[in-house]
Length: 81
Image (cartoon, rainbow, N blue to C red; front, side, top):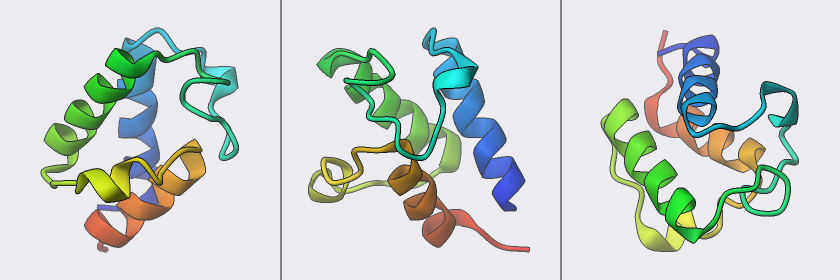
């Protein structure tokens, strides 16, 4: 999977959750900047794991606060040419 595919899928997930495309910056915090509550964040985790066919351990997930950290994590887990 390429970086552009990772970004596209993340954008699609977040758009389906009602997040404004313009808010999707690397520094965007899921709750503070994107307006997700704890249930939304849990839903995001499930959707990311399903979409990318991976399992993100809880201890890793709660350290992936800004969107940029999630993107970086996914590039290490699912990126290939």
